[in-house]
Amino acid sequence: MGESLVNSTTFHFTGANVLVTGGSNGIGLAIATAFASAGANVTITGTRQTAADYDNDFSQFTYRQCNMSNKQEIADLAQSIQKLDVLVNNAGQVMPNGGDEYNPDVFEETLQINISAAFRLTQLLKPLLSQSVLPGGASVINLASLASFFAVEFVPGYGAAKAAVVQMTKTLAVHYASDNIRVNAVAPGLVASNMTAPMLGFDAMTKPHLDRTPLRRVGQPDEIAPAVLFLASDASRFITGHTLVADGGFSAKG
Image (cartoon, rainbow, N blue to C red):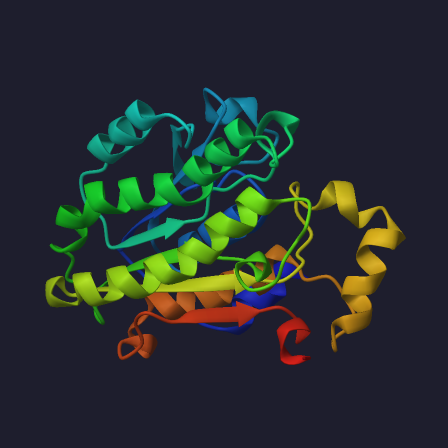
């Protein structure tokens, strides 16, 4: 299903340089694959030491290890990038190390991984993005969440961070506009991934969500990727500061 979805819409990013954080699995991998299929030179990040430490085939990407809770690794990642047209801030995590986000230390680590790291990396890479000659300008695409807008009781830190992603997107869009950099976000609904796998096996957790979702199903990573490519393309050259929600209609219901 994923391959046909990506191929049904044609995007052209030949020669463009793209960085997708957290591109080693799930939504990030789908985004990275879609950009590569569209002709881009794609760098992805993951937390493991080498690409060979993953089961997925990363041969079409450049791999960089980066733990988003480590400021020095973020700086090293930025230093390793020579040219950049599109930055996708996708890396994120709920309940780091299996912790309780109502614990203040876990809460703070969650903010670091899900919002502070994205801001730091974006600021470090802004000079490169400003040099882009990509039609429509360079793009920063942040990954928000339904937790940006709705309370998810067991992840207060993740929800706070994802809400901040939406506001950061607006602020950076205004601040970066004069440098020909557009900043947008995509907010996925419930999507099948490694992060959501623990809850997808429990009807008590998924049924209320699906009952509210008009399309009555869980999304797939390759249904999020085209939204990201659209926002990075010149087809959206008059769009900045916007968060595109892809949630099967969940948020349409009051």
